[in-house]
Image (tube, rainbow, N blue to C red; front, side, top):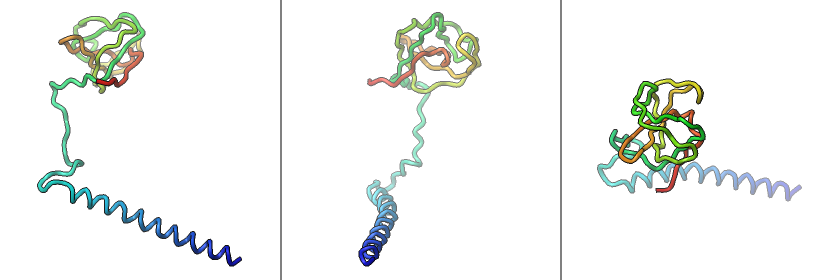
Length: 138
């Protein structure tokens, strides 16, 4: 019975110490970040890292298993057809899909398109028509 009380008291003390360190650890980490930031700079959470329109994100690739998947000049079925994706061939592509015009059969209903890069031309393919889309090492 005495051992149970001793071990119980040790466990309660250990839990209290762990909670104390956990609570102070967050506060001290934030203050350390504040101290390390150069004077006059903004915290990372306030920095807008939006990309300009002319920057290509070519660190992804896409492929299709279908034939006759059209590569269009715009993210719409009304866009001019620039060419067709070859089934099983990987194409350099953006890592973000682009909302655009709606499309349907034979790929399924959707409105997201993916930028693909053909030499010096940027085209768009219907996202639902793709068999694979992955990030690649550059």
